[in-house]
Image (cartoon, rainbow, N blue to C red; front, side, top):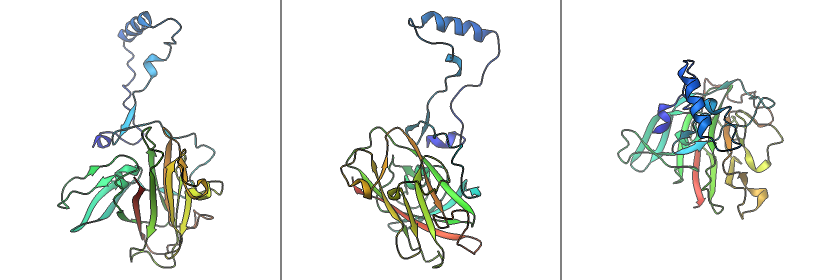
Length: 255
């Protein structure tokens, strides 16, 4: 998995070299530049960062929309349902495809493979424990190849572990930990253990009804945010136990 070789937030950019040879290299680069090309920042241009096979453009400027809960989960043990039994692995809770792109091995042993965005799509059920006050923000970038006809549904499910009086919420936003009221209603959901708790993700040129679909733009970076709280009060956990288990099903409803 290509992403395993990169640390979160790390790019493939080479370290700045202050040796005199750099000046000579920049002179050579300037000499082959086409007329009118700005070469001032050549040494500072990072290489593209790729995760699970697609280029990540980077998140939006979220300084005005900081996380509304206290702690962002980094890693977690994820249980997956599969034909013939379960499959458990340690997943990166900052990376959407490291959770929902997982294709469990047939035997239930060893490393998984990964499907491109929007993910595995075969009614994938993932379960994990989320401590009170913590949130998950799973980053993804929408590939240019996402078809207008594709529709992908994410839904909370009862796992028998989540207490009936606990509430879980999720959003799709350009910022991590963002559950604010101005997020489009089709890009957020709240689940009380019985009702609600699902939305459908599509490209912004999808022919499906706008009011019923969460629209994402090709090439942009988003976060799939999850918290054990009400949408209106994401910083106030509803789970009173040491942790509450959550279950989400992700599936393609229109390939």
